[in-house]
Amino acid sequence: MTLAPIALFVYNRPGHTKKTIDALRHNLLAAESDLFIFSDGIKPDRPDNRVYEVREYLRTIKGFKSVTPIERNFNIGLSANIISGIKQLIDSYGKIIVLEDDLVTSPFFLKFMNDGLRIYENEDEVISIHSYLYRVRTKLPDTFFLRGADCSGWATWKRGWDLFEPDGKVLLQKLIETNQSEAFDFGGNYPYTQMLIDQIEGKTNSWAIRWYASAFVNNKFTLYPGKPLVSNIGGDGTGINSGFDHQMYQPFNPNPVSVVYQKPAQNMTAYLAFADFLKRRLNPSMFYRIKRKFNSLFRKVK
Image 1 (cartoon, rainbow, N blue to C red):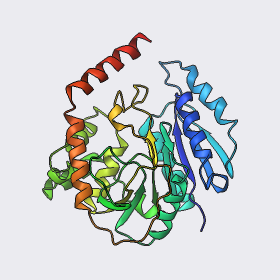
Image 2 (image 1 turned 45 degrees about the horizontal axis):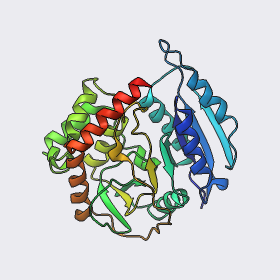
Image 3 (image 1 turned 60 degrees about the vertical axis):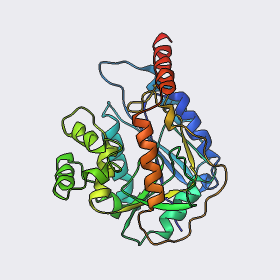
Image 4 (image 1 turned 30 degrees about the vertical axis):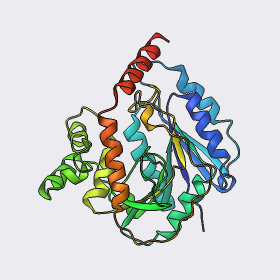
């Protein structure tokens, strides 16, 4: 089987980028994988030497079959960088593994991604393979499906990405017409519909909410591991979208996760576990709110 190319999207976080690359380099299939790194450019009104620092580091990376840095001439923004980068690779290779610069992977991340891509390649109901898992309270099976798509360490095929609808208005209309907003919001426990409205109104420019909605309205499923194969280290206030969100961090599972074929269908145990986490994330404890405020003030002082 030909391995999927890896697309890594970076901007101005050299420390995070180095951690992401170092972990990825220690993956079981790294030496056989082609790595493409899409580096967004500097904003015209915000000179930032960290962008140059990231790019200097990218030119030193070894340990992969090939390393191809793609440097944007100017800042096009996170969403445009990701959407155009995915299209560029997936049109050429037919499949892709996607990472951002705040994801630290298990040594078995690439194997799980490529195994999932191989096993479900011809399963039209499956739109993607995902590797991150929320800090849920429920024990989950080794692998399971949820309706929709996700955005923290994932993979897809051209047939999956072809369903991506960039126009949020089209997606919102489909949700409303089919009366599925509550299900889209995990039983009303998280405001994903409002996030889509915010994107439409220009309050955010999230590609991820449109990817989730595109999969959801087409009734497609994503395969998840029962234990995470990636850690999200971006909740430290340095990210474009993440802010201070330490609820998103948990250590990755250091052991391999086998992908055994199962018929795509919503796993209700996992769905309810996700709904519970999202409800707690939306209404965090007083301790967490104080901690988040402290972290925000500390970051400003630094």
